[in-house]
Image (cartoon, rainbow, N blue to C red; front, side, top):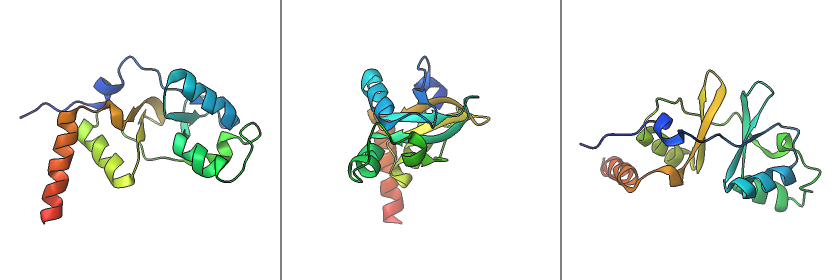
Length: 141
């Protein structure tokens, strides 16, 4: 039986990339490129999660709509109140949430404060295989 990692192990030693809702899409895109991440967590001044802005949002809500990246704020195009996980959630719980919701990124929060973010790429092959195995069982039933 394999040991399942918790979110605290996956996001350890990584500071999540955050911006306020008033930041522009251009600022977010530059920060995403600089930090080589696919998502920005949108937080208030106390570190509470307000939303998430991803590369998908940039394409579908900004570029495809012909909006200005300089004039559009994250508040206008972020996904508000995204699904989150607590730090003690297991890797397989995160993968289930990502699979069921069609997400690539899930914020990790404790008492409404951001502690990290996990992406699909953070998971090992063993964890992904376990998800595939469980999904296969449900499809048989």
